[in-house]
Amino acid sequence: MTPTAARCPLCGAADYAIVYDLTAPHSAEDVPGLVARCRACPMWFKILTDPAGLPTDYPGEAGTDDLAATYLLSDVARELFRRMLCEVPRTAGTTPRLLDVGAAQGALVDEATQLGFAAEGLDHSPSNVDAARRKGLAVRLGSAEDLDAQDAFDVVTLIDFIEHVPDPMRVLARVHRALKPGGELVVYTPNHRAAVVVLARLLDRLGVGYPVQEIFGRNHVCFFDDRSLPLALQRAGFAVHRQRQFRYDPRRPGQYISPLNLAAVTAVDWLGVPFGRVFRLLVHARKLPAA
Image (cartoon, rainbow, N blue to C red):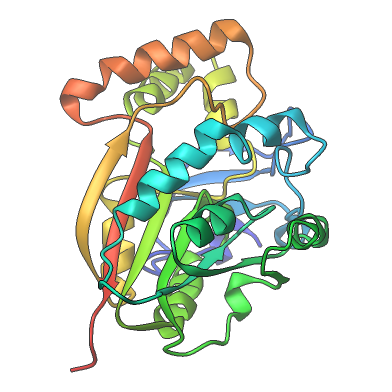
């Protein structure tokens, strides 16, 4: 796709500014492209150099990967998943049906099952699905864009997922259809208005481009924040009823990072706390009943 053919994945506008040229990859984890800021809404997104070249397996997902052991499978990760799930409203005496989209190896599905949900997962990576099934977890192969369920689930979770898809509104439309009326959607994604992102952009203006490359150049293609994510959910037919931010947890880094950089990111994220500008964003929304 050429820049002149691109449109904002949130509002569909073709009016945007190119902010960063990240078409030259710096690591095997990078997804090359041009980072754009929509002029019609708060959305930032990546115009991909090769739209067909998105990977199906990301670093940090495979069971033999040290990063996956920390980020997806560790006690710290499971504690986070339990906290999210315990905040989902439930009716006493029921067994709500839950779908985790982008389930990876099924850690959240496992935690949800232990908490009394009828939990299943969907993932686009065959190796992830195989690993989850070997653990006895109900995870199936498929893409969120092709989810064809209707009024089937009480809860859908999108954890560290929506930032990886080039057409998030299509995903949200499919999820909206799959949820029962009044069903709960839980979305967890980086907040790109966090202090650490603001500092990275400032450093780039001063000639230090590494932080911007790390934040915008890797395998994220949509860059949501505490304004654009609620707007996307509302446009997809959801009512946001809870929005929270979490500090970056150094025990659960999302990518390979040196101890010095890890300490710096953690410290800067703390500085953003008084201003509500920290790096992890959690939003709960409900599917509005049909009028």
